[in-house]
Image (tube, rainbow, N blue to C red; front, side):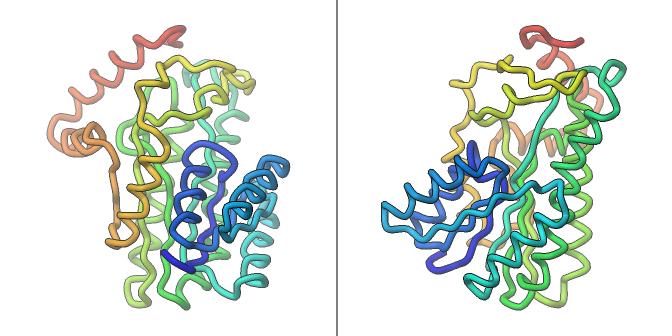
Length: 267
């Protein structure tokens, strides 16, 4: 990964931040994108103080012009893009019967359309160097999760988009990978949108029991080096992907039972 130009969206916290640090530590030129300019600049300063190459660009992935600008400014600075990681994402926690339509649209705007916009402008540059296009997904993209309809829908859409892009680019060397993380310690559940669109403000799960984002970042690096097409980080996720094909009805019941036990479950 040394000297590779890597763009990461959603880089101001959680998995995105862990990836930025991991790539920087391996000598990559890291371009960090997120909406929070202050956080990005602080992280950029910290990485530079450690002797790493880092560059931050405030980006709202729901805005096509922001995504175009992210790619444009990266090319102006480094003249290439080797890896583009679509990591920006939000979650939700509400029953489909209760959630406002605008909340579902917001989920799709960030998780799906953000990937569409960024990938559209990054791919021509990735193809030139036979680089990698990555989408960070979730087990919600393998199994529809109750109370998270918009989140699951966005991740299923992400899978379909990236798999189709992979097939379209079979002859020009573009590497396309979907990274599926399991439950990871982060702020995503605190920021999850409720039925009225307001952030949940707390996490219904014991975050200390979840995988560290640094583990996901290391798995990402290894999968990229091996040109994986789909990397499922956890054993639980790997088993779910297998059982979904064999005993899907039981998978439905297990998902319902596990998530219904969360504190303040909407169902």
